[in-house]
Image (cartoon, rainbow, N blue to C red; front, side, top):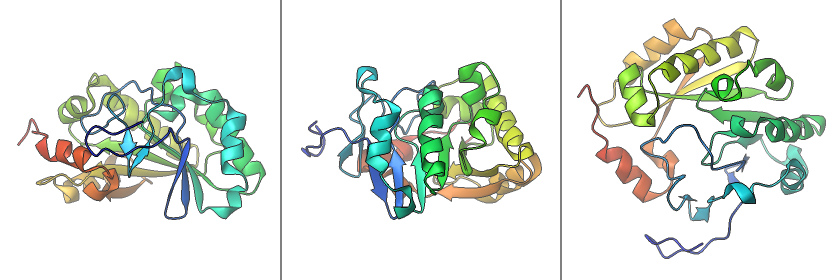
Length: 225
């Protein structure tokens, strides 16, 4: 695929390396439509095309071959431009392969996995996922719903999922985006009080790789500003 904005060419990548972590591009499908996400656009990330049609989504064995020896990496991270828990069966199969071969795993998620799959998926993923990173983005439910283009009720789903993961003994990190004017101290306090046991990690704009995605974030107008 050729990027219209940069002229770069890249074939679809199923995995990509950031520092010594390998990120697995399971799907572009998502129940949200985040302001900053390019899943419905070109889906370029640091010059690589993650654009994937549903018909192009590979089986678990393809990802296993991509990974090879998982011990070569600090972590195998299930991420990409979509929500990994939409492909729960494949996620579990690949994560099990990683754990069976001595690797470590992390799931980057919007925290809607129980809602998407219409059941509590935590007992299913716990044996194979070492850490979970949940995108909270905003502590206000109205801002959350606007940024992600979802119903406000999914804010509660995200909090509930995060707390249930902690109750199950899983390592949970809550992330927010370092938008100009965003009160990081207030957000950290909220996480400490409402998702007890979770760590807190602000995500700098540089995490989003593509300059156009960073521009989208800078153009975002919060409701509460």
